[in-house]
Length: 281
Ligand SMILES: C[S@@+](CC[C@H](N)C(=O)[O-])C[C@H]1O[C@@H](n2cnc3c(N)ncnc32)[C@H](O)[C@@H]1O
Image 1 (cartoon, protein in one colour):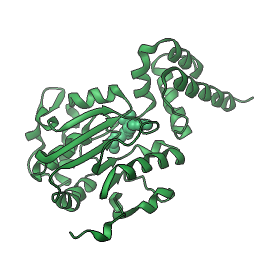
Image 2 (cartoon, protein in one colour):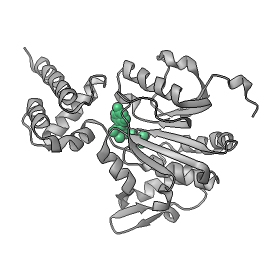
Image 3 (tube, helix red, strand yellow):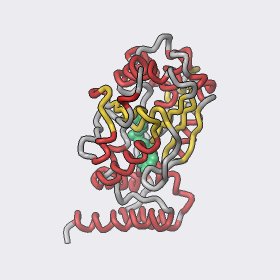
Image 4 (cartoon, rainbow, N blue to C red):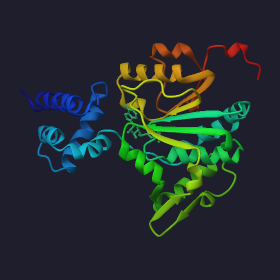
């Protein structure tokens, strides 16, 4: 038996252990990237092998948050893919403006940079007061970071450029306070945000949303788990609601695609197709 066969047995055991010990199902994640992250985590925790990592997972329950964060990828940026945020601001927000109350579900929010980006653009569009943002993630540790809204100050320049490219009307500095090494987002931006744990692999419909963002999450899922998540989004949207995926993601191969029409294709913004013809905009 060669090394890669052995490793694949070790990976199967690790995934089983995570499911049986902690109830988290990673069996439908894309195997190559999951394996890469498991190795990284094993190194960080000074385990000699994936089996060593499984052993710690089984016997050290206090490691769970760390394991969840390590096995997923909580990387994000403010106004990541600024063209998508500009499209939201210019083409989606004017349509959302016709609702007296707006629900936005941000699934897989990681450390929250997208949540604050959305809040800023909604505020500038005059929509934030009537918006509720539900920001969810599998990882409670990521959600805690998101709620704190504190980031390395070295990101500020890039984020500021992203904000301008997204059509921001002011200066990003107006929304945060910067120290020597850290930048803290204005906590007022959180006033209409609810952070909550939600697992796209096992949990159900989350809320009735006018807009759902789930960007750079499906890319880590197998086709069947992507279908599950897309079905959840379809069932959570109001009629003619909007769904944003990441720029490297699409739903072309999913049977759920027939429920949607592309709204702004290059930015991966879709709209629920049902009753679209009945709408007068
Ligand atoms: C790369 S980040 C994406 C962050 C942000 N949406 C963006 O595009 O910048 C992926 C996030 O998806 C979350 N995630 C992974 N599997 C998940 C699942 N089954 N349910 C909910 N969130 C999940 C991870 O914890 C991580 O925070």
